[in-house]
Amino acid sequence: MFQLYKYSILFVFSIVLGFAFNMFLLPHEILSGGVTGLAMIFGLLTPINSGIWLVVLNVPIFIIGWLKLGKEFIMNSVFCVFVTSISMQYIPVVEITDDVLLSSVFGGVIIGIAVGLIVRFYASSGGADIIGLVLTQKRDIPLGGMIFGLNSIVVFISGFIFSWDLALYTMASIYISGIVVDRVHTRHIKLSLMVVTSKGDVLKDTLIKNLIRGITVMNGEGGYSNSERKILYTVISRYELALVKSLIKNVDDTAFVSISETVEVMGNFRRD
Image 1 (cartoon, rainbow, N blue to C red):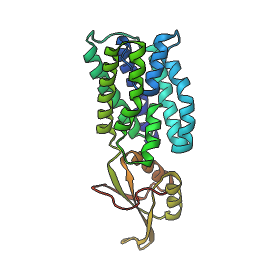
Image 2 (spheres, rainbow, N blue to C red):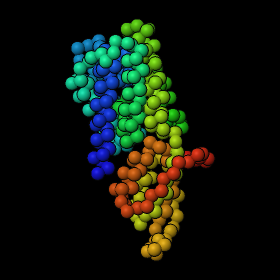
Image 3 (tube, helix red, strand yellow):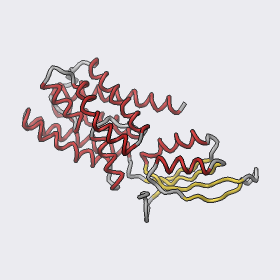
Image 4 (tube, rainbow, N blue to C red):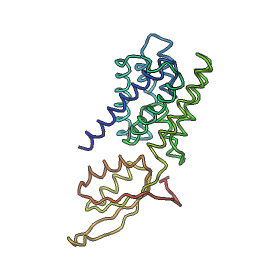
């Protein structure tokens, strides 16, 4: 049921991305950032649809993500990019408004909401999102700020190819989307996770294999059943929560799980 819910969310907001690109940004030659922005440039300069370029340019980045972020994340991301690419071929490139500034602002907001929710459900829209997530594994930097930095190069490319006015509108759009991504995604928020389970060893190994966090294991006893339990404690980032919940359900769907927001973390947050 959770998988169906997750893929429904990813499907809907991948289409929302295609809508934002074709209805707000492309009609005014305002670009998104990173790989998506490059796909838009190639789509505007060649007869090949931007959605096709989106898939082609993401292939090497998916390979990097597969190695650094894991199979499930990349499979989810491939699904999102595929849906966005298809939607961009069927959604007409039509102006919602002839005001370029309004298009850049609302396009940035819609893209930020869509990308933030996609990342919350352990996926990405490809390109700079994946590169940003790989880099934020090493440093505790808000994802939106990282994506904005990576995407800025597209602004300079668009300035030389099109016009500097449009480049500045592009900068405004990706800046707004970066802010919205951080509001929705909130990767830098830390969560304390406590799991009480009868399958402690299996669950511990599963979490260690799929996360970069250390785990503390304690012995426990059921107050009513008097049976032995393992108590697993760790601190994770907000974006890892969807993956962790899925892993726990797959190993022990009867486990007791407590999740709370953590104000501050001291010591070794990452497992090196």
